[in-house]
Amino acid sequence: MSKKLKIVTIGGGSSYTPELAEGLILRQDRLDIKEWWLVDIDAGKEKLEIVGEMARRQVKAAGLDWEVHLTTDRTLALKDADFVTTQFRVGQLDARIRDERIPSKYHSLGQETNGAGGIFKAFRTIPVILDIINDMKELCPDAWLINFTNPAGMVTEAAIKVGGWKKTIGLCNVPIGSTRMNNTAMGYDGQDVLFHKYAGLNHFHWHRVWDKDGSEVTNKLIETIYNPESDFLKDHEVKNIMLVGYNYEQLKSLGIIPCAYHRYYYMSEDMLEGTLADYEKGETRAEVVKRTEAELFELYKDPHLDYKPEQLALRGGAHYSDAACEVIASIVNDSRTVMVVSTQNNGTITDLPYDSIVEVSSVITAHGAEPFNWGSFPAGARGQLQLMKSMEELVIEAAVKGDYGKAIEAFTVNPLINSGSHMMDMLNEMLVANKDYLPQFKETIAKLEQEGVTYIPQ
Image (cartoon, rainbow, N blue to C red):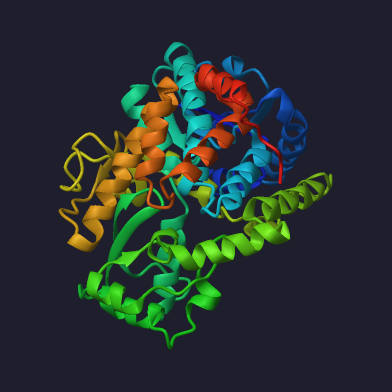
């Protein structure tokens, strides 16, 4: 390593920043960092200052001389950056609460990255990532963009295909949890023995697994983890998704392992029932997360706290930040680490367009991600995958152009949204509820308000 690095984190006031600090510190022998800039908007300034001071304490406790800067001036931070990481949430957690509660009102699944909620998070986020890229083109034209802002797949696709920023890699923590769970299920707790190959889309991927002797153990894992007589999942599945059992016979027939988010699609009725129960109690996931985040920031205020607290694991996004640090270190050192990332398909999945963005196992090199070939999916997965990619393309087009017709098409195609008059009522109310964050839909929203569409918090 010869060059001292400048890293910029957009959304620096996030509760995840202490994990990002920890990940960078743990890789200090592979990352020669000079400056780390934490950036947020004026509305997030208080959180930025709290978590920024926390990050400074972490760096100091590690005995490092990194300069940790806090700013609400994005252009000041981006100048000559080597890496830009993005972890922002447009509208903050209140927007996520609306994303979850409005669909529930219409007896539809609302979730951060799936269904109507995921679509609206993309609507709010994609214009912002494109604005960031416009700044990067002027201020740091050689920088890498490492995105873990959700919905990560669509945001990454917009960055690469619309923004033209080829040096973009998207990240997700779900494969990390699955990999650890599978190793534990095979008796390798705390070890990384198994070889995994993931392919699909962000929060909509499947994987196959091989043991150290070269034998495929995918079916054995399905039997061990998903057999109705097994209670393995109770202690090992991701914390932020309601635990609903899969159809065991379906998984055995499919022969590949779905990610945790497939419950929303494979077990929609059961997931909706649980979602509506939480809605009635005022316990949607977003509302729970908001309380957890408030508790975290109280901890972060402690001037003696200089390490990531265990409570951060309850936030639901563990390992995102650590993965981002590993991608950076692998690019800087050409480490060729195998990771699961969102990157350009380039023929990896033959069922999807060549230039589409997919989430796949890849080798991370100095020139970016080199994905492993997957080939074609079985019919039980292929149709769903192609439908979801079509939905993503519609969402991105609607988000970029403010195209109401494409928004309707995206809602219609999404398998978690029932089409009809209630669908239109839900779409229109969500547009009005998000009007402060959707300037591209300004004319449509004004027309809807003239027609009497309103948003009344439930």
